[in-house]
Image (cartoon, rainbow, N blue to C red):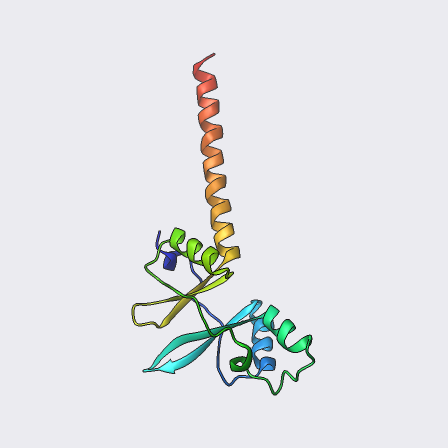
Length: 149
């Protein structure tokens, strides 16, 4: 299954010069734990970094820096890991595990931001799939038991 079939196409984004206060307000408003930092390149939103709620705590709160002065560009994770929207779910899982990331922006062939997938999204998908398999096993066991009586 291509990752774009399950990713969230509504990504909360900010530009590099947005303050941490602005980014934090967006996280709260949209109930998300991260914002993707974008740059406008050729009319498209290209992801260049990510800032998480944990980054805000570690980089600002713990060091008592002013969130109205510090920008997301100052603290963003600059080595952004992304996957193509044509990538499979298993490939996305491998990428997340290999890079140690919980959030993975999805891009199209031109590098434009197309969505985001999170560890939580994948865990929910896997839980639903395992639940369906469990029901299949139970149904097969009941069917077998009926045949053998």
